[in-house]
Image (cartoon, rainbow, N blue to C red; front, side, top):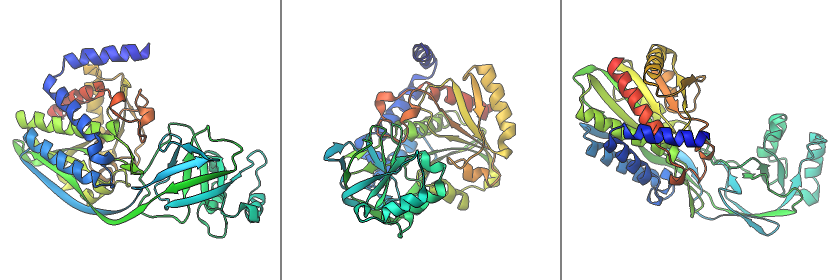
Length: 418
């Protein structure tokens, strides 16, 4: 019932929004999620292909100036084989298994050691791992169990004195893939498998290639639309990088995360190029967000406009969902603006409410917030597409656009009245 109501609401709202904006939005989301952009990661230069595409889209939208801000990152990638089988039965990458971003390439057949969680005894575990039959094993345990005994299990993950080859955590599906801590490569692999991983398997065979890429060159794409005044700037920001590849065949489309945010930025740039605002507008599509906010942090350290001149910053990340409640985070300096957002939302009936969470280092508003910039972060959580973020199923088959249309109206009204 909720899904039917939500779909009807999306359709009704779509009819009331400028068709060309929504059409362009959908077009850019679809383009950025295609195989040719390689998941906008660091295999086959997907992130560089995406930056070129976005720079061209901003120019087509009428931006007065488009520049590339270069920086570099160290990043671990998985560009080759990505195979795993349990007792000879192949598992599907991205669906039945993934590997943590800091893992080394891993090749071979490994015995399995299952942790007895009902009778947990770390000293017994270490004694068992010292036995010849367990040498070079993968330790299997439920993902959440180590949070109760984290210190012990962190040692198993990295310490050379323990003879296990690595860890295999079982977790709920859909399995997530990450890049946040990929700036180094650990000594042992950390694998995740789904809850249907067998409870009594004897061994797994793993064939996963990695390639560590130091000093990989990225660019923030910065588009400017000039306003009538140049003493202050409204900034829109969204990260365009995504997870890239897990193996040569599997890529992560990243429709919601975050093709949706960048498509919105381009349509906003087009809007303000046609209807000149009072203040200068800056649209920043940043790279390196999935690699621990590297692009936005670099911009804050090397700003192209004085940070104190930023009147307000709006971060759009994962807005391609359909929850009628909008999640947001606000910097201390941005609370006056948040009061206006709440007022406009109540008057315009855009969302049932704005659910303000605790400020966290989870997206590109955070480095700006730490510098005292007034800012807000919009992310549509817990809708029908949210469970699939950071999975290969974040694709066009699950794309919805009604949150974009609400956000577009809300933020343009805010810019006009703030």
